[in-house]
Amino acid sequence: MNYLSVARKAAKEAGKIHKKYFRGSFKIRTKSNSFDLLTIADTESEKAVVSLIKTYFPEHNILAEEYKYPKTKSPYTWIIDPLDGTNNFASGLPIFCASVALQYNDQIIVGAIYDVTRDELFYAQKNKGAFLNRKRIRVNSAMRLQESLLITGFYYSRGRKMIETLRIIKKFFLAHIRGLRRLGAAALDLCYVASGRVSGFWEFELNPWDYAAGKLLVEEAGGRITDKSGNKLPLTKKTFVIASNAKIHSRMLAIINK
Image 1 (cartoon, rainbow, N blue to C red):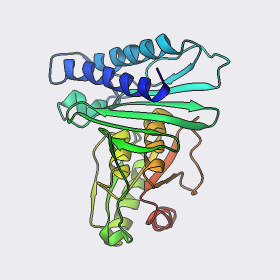
Image 2 (image 1 turned 135 degrees about the vertical axis):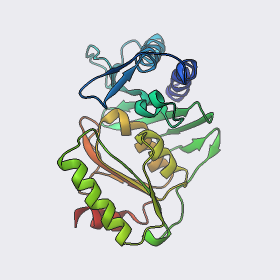
Image 3 (image 1 turned 90 degrees about the vertical axis):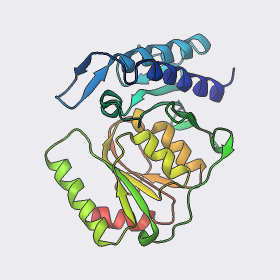
């Protein structure tokens, strides 16, 4: 089975577990603080995804949100968010997904993101385009911020980073953007940029499992995704992420860095 097929299959396996528990009865635990949540759907879906990947590619590395895995000598690393949007999931809000990407050396070569509540499977392969349920997707054609609906996210910080995010939001509204949304699942936010539903997205701090698959989707759909300085994303650590249809990217960077 090829890499993309495994990524798609793994994301859908996670989706089955999401569906099993969503709006059911389950315990909710906390991690770093009272609003950093963990559910059985997070842990079960990660185990299912890793088990499936290891069935096909036992020598590959795994970088995932909930558990640490032994390092191998392979140049391949699967980057997994088993349930992005846990707070939404735990609250019964149907905005969450599974994200699975494969990195080869310093490049993401396949990615799949699955939203079981809408049965939407977003996926991409390096230099082969981006797709939603087998249909090719492209970023939208907005040329100006005034034509642009944007998405942002808040990291778990309730201090300086939150204040800075609110300051940037104010500047975007003063630039007369069409509107702003905060959906609570960064991987899906990037899918919505890739599919043209929104023109841009930014978040102060994301982990590689939040943005790896979405990065490839945005790029293969004709968009641009960078850090705050306009540089490529590191894939190895937390970073500021800005994604857009490419046409408004420089304007977004200017506002964020002003």
